[in-house]
Length: 219
Image 1 (cartoon, rainbow, N blue to C red):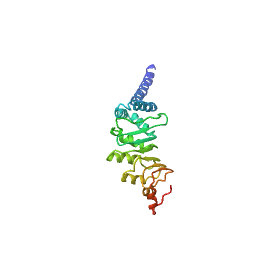
Image 2: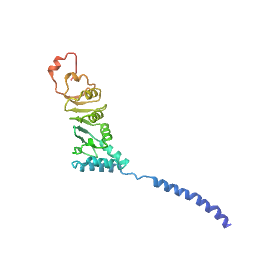
Image 3: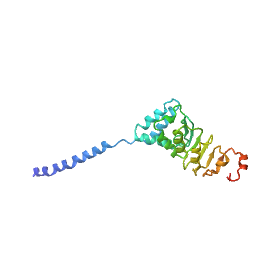
Image 4: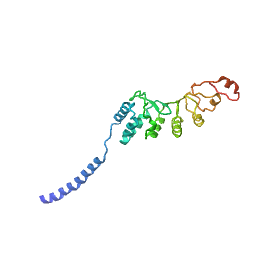
């Protein structure tokens, strides 16, 4: 009697419990730890701040972004917060003024152009609603990539120290979303702009205006 109960109960317990425990253990062992994303973003900002003038900023960026997928995403999220970018021939300065990262400046002796991850970083910067000021551009393809990435449909605030090259100016003319604009252009160039900025600053040659009768532009 007791023997029959042992045969009917014990094998059932062994068959039902053992595989279930192994499945749960395997599921838990395959899970990766989830890191605190806000903490990672803060750490990345601090790393940039502390390495700003050491000439090691590119190494810091590369080491952090390549250390894991979550770190990579957090770093790009940092560059999505940018409010203003100033482009120079040899470097790029960025400014962030919103929380949780207040005013920080990327103005390092180690130019971000030399960073091996500059292309995804540039794409992230271009995706933010940022003010773009182009003082000068790097030569060659890099300058073209930077201009076309930052000056695209959706950009609102654009400032140039000098008139863009012809190919860049033609690209600029097709943008329709610029609301604040400053650029030393000829009067004849103004009618080519598809954007009609509310805030516009330009040095005007009135002699050229009076001589040009076929073109009209409302200021």
